[in-house]
Length: 241
Image (cartoon, rainbow, N blue to C red; front, side, top):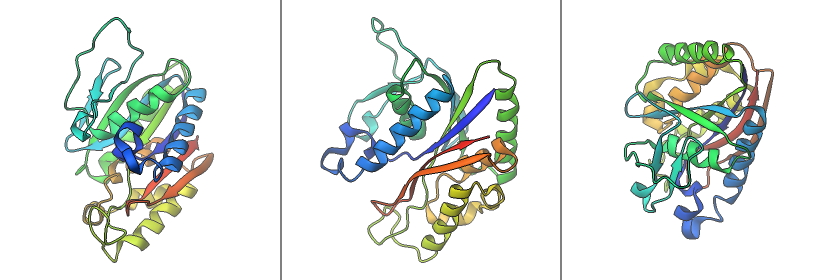
């Protein structure tokens, strides 16, 4: 049975070993993300991580990846591993799954996860269909099932942002923030792929899967972090059905 969805973001600097001198700038985001993972773990010991990547893919609980491509070989897995076994590292695990795996490891208990990566160019209607099918699947399970949505907002909010500044970004991001704060599924469904691509809103497809997952207005929505420390919008919250 589906019990809750936690929303987090996926900057590599969320990981302390990668943050270096920027660790303090991401401290609040890191604390909120770890707290969200803990709340999700209290609700369900089995997770589905939903993120966005270049191509659609799925990853099972035996997956082990590494942040080596981001500068430090911090290894994360989706399942509870055997300390006596040296796992094979999949070098193709995308960033949202790596971050999801890192947060899984911070959560109390023996959380086991699998991951669903949706291609960045997936049409909105297909994204919501994926979410609806996932909800049906999770509701059919006897055990409690949680979803961790890993997605970033606009990367074009300031001149020093990774995508530079786009004058459309602040208003578009404010509207997205409101939708994530209130559980406005209609707004999430209407997110335009072309506009989101222009503004670097890489989480568009994942949030539209979220809209399909809930179908109707969530029973409760809580936002615990919203900010843009590097000119990139990050959001952390918990949605209950």
